[in-house]
Image 1 (tube, rainbow, N blue to C red):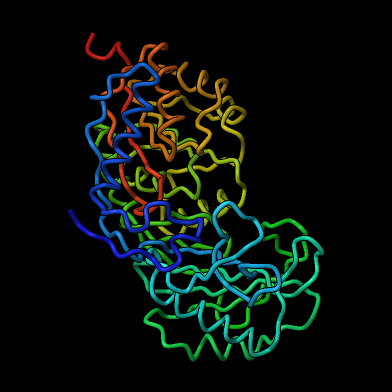
Image 2 (spheres, rainbow, N blue to C red; image 1 turned 90 degrees about the vertical axis):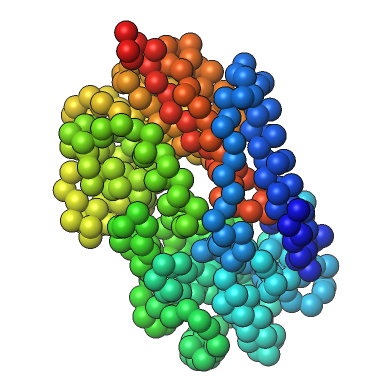
Length: 391
């Protein structure tokens, strides 16, 4: 059994639950969890064909949002992740195993930079202080790196010095942009009041499924590109003869799989409630020269009635909460021959599959994917076929 070296921050950091656990055991535990969810929803656990290991188990994460704080009240400034079961305490994030080493380098250098200047972290209780977050994003296929420091506007931040520090850092990536975001919102989320480009641009380029994607500073994109590409290719292989068909891609995000299907399908309609994601999807479709996909910014339940033609195939990739009952009822009412279900939460997927069976569908099998080693997250793919097929 493969041994793994435990991260020095594993006992404190709230990020990775499986630190120090041999990878084969991680896979076994995740596969068992998925089988349990399927069994609880009335399916035979054997419907799960197994779990596919991640192509790369270290340094795979292309985005991290670090927080400034301290481990104990009045303690030394830290830059890293929230401690387990704590919204206040922050533990060191400079030794993370699931990010590129350039991220760890910039965490250490940014912390030293801020300590030298005597900057103080933002207080969630009193809403005072300067330092809030460091957001790092990397194009894993292009090597482009986007660096974004987030502060309040309470006091001046040395933008020129920070830029000089980043550009002089010993990195293997190519820095494509250095940003300073100002956030005075009292909530913990990064809300942008102002964003200044200190150098370069506020986006990076990524490549997946043979397509190019422009990813903005705050745009959603798949966190593990290699694993996502493998899952998408496997999923699309389950849909026979997509050529000449009309496809609905529901909960499409920034339209990665929509555009991959558009390379063969007659027309793809992507629906996503997050308007920023839809704007990015449209831009990237144009970038890739695709004119046979349309993207709608709306809730799935509302959008379905407004689409101009019925689907031949439906693809769903819902959030962790799964598909809500009314939306699921509408989706199932089309009675298309195949529904491809991609899930980031096996529990809610199993519940949705049970409802699909009651509407005349049968799952041809479920495959689990470990796209996020050392964490408890598991992705799944299932092809639902209508029972009228072959009759």
